[in-house]
Amino acid sequence: MFYEPRQGHGLPHNPFSAIVSPRPIGWIATRSAEGQDNLAPYSFFNAVAYTPPQVMFASTSTKPDRDGTKDSVANIRETGVFCVNIVEYAARDAMNATSGPWPREVDEFDHARLARTECTMIPAARVAGAPAALECRMTQIVQLPGEANLVVFGEVVGVHLRDDCLIEGRFDITRFQPLARCGYRDYAVVRDLFALARPGD
Image (tube, rainbow, N blue to C red; front, side, top):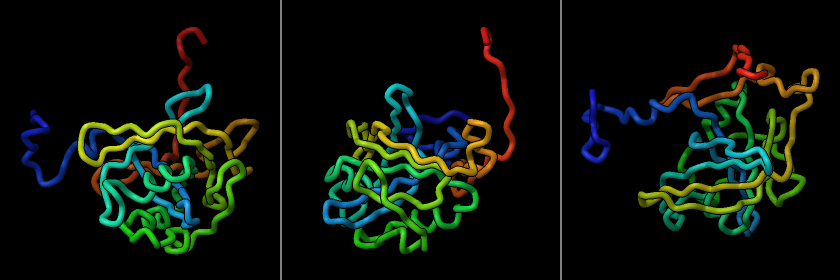
């Protein structure tokens, strides 16, 4: 099968959402200028640089009560900061509960019954007990082609690691089993690791 995206695929569901998978999930915590906390998962998310450490996430839809975007991007525009929480398998239902198109006044921490704690370097909350959390200062927001496609880049200015995930000086993801998005309504969990030596190691 071949198709041109601009002419449609003719399938019951868009295959593009499943082609690039699995994708890590950035559970983005923000706070509005008025102090309203927000928490939402984004699967167009990744780390993009080591020095300084930087991450990105893309928001690709809108809400009626926001000006052409969603709560996360709107809050970041106001405050310039956000926190990325890493999602573990044990938090899958809570993560899913925060993914709805809730009105801007809904606090997803409360909605999903999640404990929160304050960030250290930025004025925002983070998910208490998350395996890791990255406190970020926004560096730029890029408008991509398409009406609602916005990419937020941020520099990581603070890193929280859960103590039980540190094994012999390494951050061991098998201790918490990261959740990943596979398109449609499908997810995957990382349980098995293997190592490959690079040429020249």
